[in-house]
Structures are given as C-alpha cells and as structure tokens.
Amino acid sequence: MLQHKACLLILLVVLSTFSVAVGNLKVGVEKGNWIEYNVTYTGIPTQGHDVNWARMEVLNVQGPNILVLISSKYSDGSIQNVNYSLNLETGHLIDNFIIPADLNRGDSFYAENFGEITISKVENREYTGSMHTILCSSFNNNTYFWDQATGVSVEGITQTEEYTIHTIVTDTNMWISSFAGVFDFSSIFLVSSVLLIFFIAGILAILRYLKMHKERK
Image (tube, rainbow, N blue to C red; front, side, top):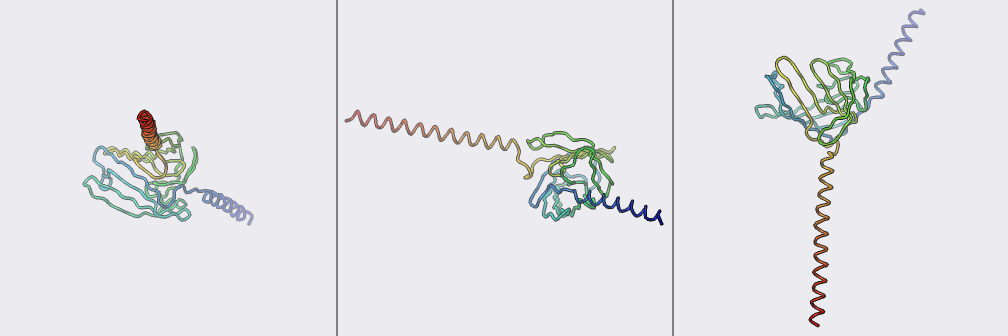
C-alpha cells in the first residue's frame, strides 16, 4: 500500500512538472507573420527535397496551435502550397519550423520526430540586415538556427553523404532590417536636402526681385 502511494506521489510530481513546462511555453509568432527562405544544395537530394525557395506564413494562432501555409518552389519551377498545423505542446513541428520562443542554452523542447531537443548554443548572428539572438542545435545530420524572440527557423543545414542542403532567411515582416532603417533615414535626409535647396533658392529669388524692383524705382 505504501509502495503504491509512493509511486502515485512520484507520478503526480512528474505530471505536475510536465504541466508547468507546458504552461510556460511561449508562442512568439502571430497571425500575418511571414518569412521567406533561399535554399541551395549540392549533390542530388532525394525527391521532394530539391527546393530552391520557400515561404512560410502564419494563418492563425490559438494557444500552442499554429496554422501555417508553406509554399515551396522546386527546381523544375513548380510551386507547392500546403497548410500545416503545428503544436508546440505535442511537438508536432513538422521540420522544426517554429519552436517555443525565448529559450536559452540548456533549455529543451519536445519534437515528436526527434524527442527532446536541447539548445546547445546561443549567439548573436546577422540575418536580413539586423542582429538577432540565435539559438542553435545539431542532431541527425541537421543543424538548426532559430530566432530566440520568435522561435522561427532562420537557417538550417542538412548534410548527408549524397547531398547538402542550406536554407537561410532572405526576407520577413517579423522584424525591421537595419538596412531598411538606413534607407529610410537616407530618403528623409535626401528629401529634406532638396526641400532646403528649393527654399533657399526661393528666398534668393525673392531678394533678387525686390532688389531689382527697388533699383527701377
């Protein structure tokens, strides 16, 4: 009897710990977010992996459930659009496109295809012209890089004896590129400079007109 109670107590502790972990999962994306990738490969990838461009758009977010539309462009020019339902609690992450946000080194998340995945490294890396805190993990010939703030995959490398696939983000609406900020500032500066030149030219023209009018009198 005591042994059964002890086992029950251990089970309750384990379940409560699991519940806390699930409750602490943070979803870092929202409806309308999108991200585009460029895909390059060497060798001969298996059928269905000869993708050279991809786009993921978040269609809906409800709790840990994330509905996404993934568009893939293949080497023959054809484009495939497929809806996927991801779930951060159950670990249904397809190819780990999105993981819980705000993880740190040593933290782990569950993926149904791989089991527990531990974040092995956190570093600052530049993507689409801006710096990000990036999470990294390697397993099963795959190396993944995720944006810490959103949990979205920004880069991935798959290496086998037959081929190597490299996927990297090229554009997104989830963060503002520092290049865009520079461009905006430059545009504002340029427009302001042109307006200032016209203003000064106008003042000089008025002064010249007044001077000529005075001399005629």
